[in-house]
Length: 225
Ligand SMILES: [Zn+2]
Image (cartoon, rainbow, N blue to C red; front, side):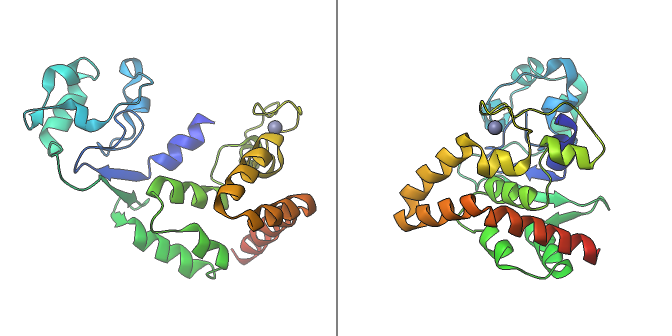
């Protein structure tokens, strides 16, 4: 599971501005998320990059308590310390060519390669945070590390969903749509959004329309490529 997550997340570089990137899990050093590359030093902690600043400069003693000397040297020499009042840290897509693209341009590439569909348009919403939009995109491209997706990559394991008590296989559809837990969540959010949508989602889930649509579109994509 972790392998797939690493692969996806490492494609994004967070440019430090105000320093609100996650210290351990966002790739703000261009070397990959520190959680994965700092081995023994890494801790599972929700801390932000801006917490490592002292009077406008990198707080070296604090960095030393968390990171290796090598990494600290890299940070101090190549990354401008975050400044209060600047904009949120900015995500950039690092393509395989090692060139840096702004995420919008990548989105345009994706749109050109596949025909723009209503789903894509619904997926990329300006007001929603980048992380959420990117998660939609990963789900759409089957880039989340559920057991069914891992199986497609020839990584097999005994699969069991851990988010409910149904003992079903952990598939993307089960986890995000059909499991009792997902169902409960969808209904809850649908009620908050608009009551009439709740009925529609329920219908979709009952008839599996949503899942069939995703699978058919996925097949079409595969045939094209
Ligand atoms: Zn389940």
